[in-house]
Amino acid sequence: MVNGHIVLSILTLLAYIAIAYAVGRLLVAWLTRDPSPLLSIVAPLIGASLLALQLWLYGGLHMPWNRVTLLLPWVVLVVVSRRRFWAALAGDWELVKQVGHELTTLEPLELLLAVAGLVIALTYLLNLVTQPLTGIDAVAVWMYKAKLYYAQNAVDLRPVAADVRRNLDYPPLFSLMVSTLYVLMGRVDDIFGKSVNFLLFIVGTASFIALVRSVLSRLLTALFAFLFVAMPIFGLALLYSPYMGWADYPFGIWMLVSLIFLFDGMRTDDSVSLLFAVIAAAMGALTKNEGLTFLAIVLLLLGYRLARKVAATRAVPSVDPRLLVTGLLALAPVLLWQRYIRVAGFDQAVLSHRHWGQLLPALPGRALQILRGTRQLVSERLDYPWIGASFVLASLLLLVRRLPVSAWVYAAVVAQVAAYFVAYLVTPYDLDWIISTTFGRLLLQLAPSVLLLLAITLGQAPAAGHDATVKPTINAETAVIL
Image 1 (cartoon, rainbow, N blue to C red):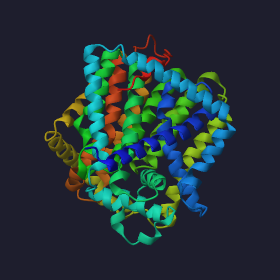
Image 2 (spheres, helix red, strand yellow; image 1 turned 120 degrees about the vertical axis):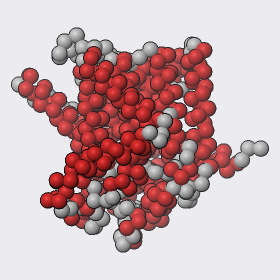
Image 3 (cartoon, rainbow, N blue to C red; image 1 turned 90 degrees about the horizontal axis):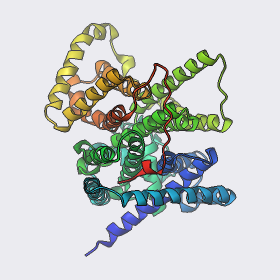
Image 4 (cartoon, rainbow, N blue to C red; image 1 turned 180 degrees about the vertical axis):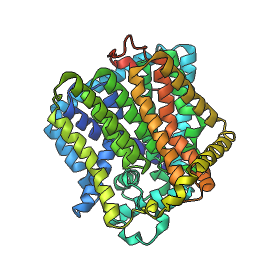
């Protein structure tokens, strides 16, 4: 017999995704009248972030959090811009119909992979809405803060300022996304709150498929899509109860989405895609502290690209004011949060108490200890060596085939790995303990991006010359969703 509570939870989650899509699609429609399918696919994730940030803003303005205050502004915006919004929906519906036609032409192996992936996805969904919340960090940090924010109608950590167990410097976006679900439901439900991860799973999978399909054959895309859905390391966050409700998988998806737009923007010279690379990186920085490094990496890469263009043309490229304003607005919450935790004294600033004179001579030995510790962990998990082998293969392909666009993604991934390594080098905590407790989570953050890197280095055409420009287009066929 069907459990009514489970059905209601799933319907509520689907309603949340639909509302988030509408909100995100409004932003996309405002920025461009001719978006790529990638922008439509990522719209629910952008919309979910906008709703979460809206709650944060309401808290600062002392406005109540409820369904009316949350949704009314967006209803007004839909009415005001109804022609553009309905035209956007009509365009997306045409895309959906073309995807449906594409699915009817799948070959037997492709169909088998699609069905298997769908079964796994449904298993993730059922587990996310039914399994108890047991992870220590999920209970004490992410879901706790979601309840705290919801109870106060504000992002205010002063009531728990003395409780170091809450990791008060952790960014608020993931918890605010859960709070958004509570606002729509009208009550707190820890078990249901972690189902926000399913939205990230859906958007991450669909955007991954859309990008990969533009560089690989349909069969190879199906194989990569199945890997993206079925790799055991992803099941850690979507299937394994003690780890559900943590923010590492959400950050990994934000990083993936940012790199997808970075790749697409670099190969097409599209400012909107590059803008969304920054937006996704900024939202990653509002999800996990590791995202601050990644945001800096993306901004540095784009700054380097701009400097090259200025040097080549002797002129500063024109910038659409709407894109510039949107980018600055995306960065503003990151800056506000960093200021908030410092003013409130929540920034732990552990490195300020390090004895650098003693640490520097110990760095070579610590580096060897890191390598030994990670090697031991890699030998204990079957999917860890596969992720490492994928990165090595992508590196060799990049070196041999000379792939200028893929090199941007590669640089971002390598820089993020280097940042993790440096963090291990200088951490004041016991090195063996910190490696054993965080290495798997860092790999979970990196795994989607490593899989993307392997796919694009396999599929991107080699450059004809050193400065060759590749400008493929993403059509409806590329948006096939398993």
